[in-house]
Amino acid sequence: MPRVTTTLILTGFLFAACSSDTTTKDTTAIYTQDKSNHVFTQAVKLSREDEDYRILGKSFFKIPWVEAPSATTARDGLGPLFSANTCIHCHPHNGAGIALDKDGNIHRSLVMRLSIPSEKKLNNDLMLRNGFIPEPTYGGQLSFNGVSDVKYEGSAALSYVERKGAFKDGETYTLHEPHYELKNLQYGAMQQDANVAPHIALALIGLGAIEDIAAEEILKNEDIDDKDKDGISGKANWVYNPETNTTALGRFTWKAASATVKHQSANAAHNDMGLSNPLYPSDNCTDKQEECLKAPKGRGGFDLPMERLDAITYYLKTLKIPAQRKTGGFEKGEQLFNELGCVKCHVDSFTTRKGVEIYPYSDFLLHDMGERLGDGHTIFKAEANEFRTPPLWGIGLYEKVSGELNLLHDGRAKSISEAILWHGGEAQAQKEAFRQLDKKQRETLLEFLKGI
Image 1 (tube, helix red, strand yellow):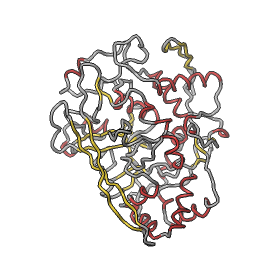
Image 2 (cartoon, one colour):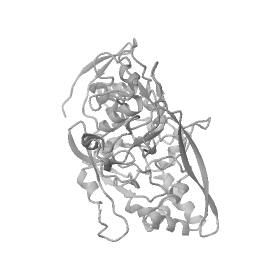
Image 3 (cartoon, one colour):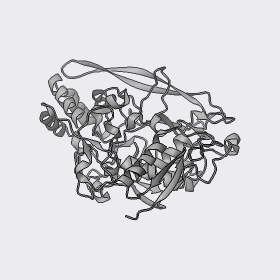
Image 4 (spheres, helix red, strand yellow):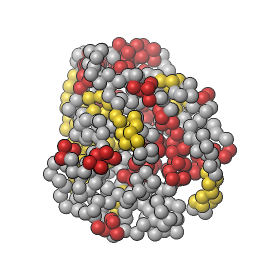
């Protein structure tokens, strides 16, 4: 890989941005045995110059951005419309997002994706590049904040309806079905048929390793027409990658809508913080938001230039992966996991291009999860009820790292058991098989899942 050296002035300090080789070749150090709430923040062992570069990326990831104009020229350009002013707000300690804050309001790590039906073909270029048609007035995501003199777009409220059920052995459970209400819309009514899809931030585990899986290894598990008749299809999402101007295999986000870590980082910077960057060069304003369009810009081109986007990407790709935490019931739980057929989608292992065996428990493909989980959001080849199988590695540490446990695409499940019970569509049979287990078997399965 080519190497570059760039010197940046950052809040009064000099950093040497030294490397563009953004994945470790030290295969022995990719996992960590740490179980603390800082486990998600540890990086692989790097050379001194690469460690400097990682720290640079970490700083842009963690330190808040400010609105322009500002004396902090390396970090201005926030917004004009935004949800959060730093990446870490959505990924506490690099972990999974939180649905509600302590006051019961929507947390900024739960965003509202906006779209209108794509069959209207309002703009083919938008479909090619975004994979969906944004809502005309508010764009592709509702911004909860705005800089000075720019009105925020709106807010949202979340309430739950209890859905009660029972396992075969008689033990009862309660699921919490979320209902969202958009409020205080500052730019008028949305298009009547607009779709609102809540998506919570994902944990940042093993991003570099996932990107290092060869596409053909992921595609081996694709079975779009369910030729093996097991009820499970698995479909790749092919997406537009603005970095290469090509179509590529999507493997990140809830809908597998991003091809690479840099692609997703640039998308999040644009949508969540309103940062223009080489992959998303414009401000996050629609042509109906004049205040947003006229707001002061950051100096010196993009709010997030390529060298800083590269540094953030490097930081994310060098984070370690939590090692499995095997307990006495681990092997029996793994056996149940396989017998129930969970492993058909949550594929246990892959070998990366560098020859590292990893255990993400995901096939990184799209699956129909049924109407009860469907969010109505279509993007590229992902349909309204389809989601990428989320990796399960480290799931037993989520609550310790983030402070809350909110699972599934909208964070509705407050436990692993609840998340399983929400499964439908292609996973309906596995959900029912879980309901048939007795209490001891369920505990064994959950013990396994908390240890992977």
